[in-house]
View (cartoon, rainbow, N blue to C red):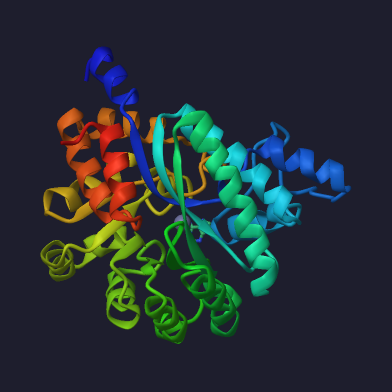
Length: 334
Ligand code: ADE
Ligand code: ZN
């Protein structure tokens, strides 16, 4: 692919549906907060200043250690400002971020409301300054267990609306079963929230089926290991289930050895509705701009392919119709 085409793709306005807000924290931001609060974060960073982790389970513990310096609504407001500044600098115009009441007030609804309000105000300021729109998805954390998930779901249900638009599950896919979280997903659904769950990142295709059948989600976080079951791939395509694909995350964490071996192109060719995201960009040394240009180089994706992905992403966004229309204008989709 020639440099002009790559430059054109790098410059496209971009949409992201799968970003963990703490996972977007620049390492220098976390180091600064640790210093302010005298928190010892030894082991969290490599000598070059980047986040240090060996594998997925270690990544989750480093993530939680870094998150321990975020201790107030003001800290989260600063985090949202830092994350959206970086996203906007990479051309992102619309983002949905995973927010965790477990980290924001420990599952207490009144405390969560304060964290949420601070994040919304920071997001509104970022929208005025940089033209980027943020919407929130409350996420429960699988390895914290189903009982704690219920408190996250209650926080989500109590604050559901035009800004807090979804409920999901992240964390260690190898812990517990999706059906153990059905109560929480039912509560969120009844509150009018859209649903997504991490599945098929670490466990195989059967886990993707379980997210759909046991939790009733319309989107899957990752879902890429669906490729191992042709009948499931056909079902995803037929039913229009949307995958939140994070290629750079999967390669860095070792789900696939390199981007050429990643199934995103095969899934797309088979008619599965795919969207693109960074997951936890500074942890995985990625940005939306890098994801786009890496995919263009590796699979020869041109502006037409990205336009098709944008259309899918906009349709799959959990926001209101009014927000969808306003974002569409920024993408120049008629
Ligand atoms: N939390 C943050 N990033 C995650 C990932 N890639 N999978 C599961 N949980 C996460
Ligand atoms: Zn994720």
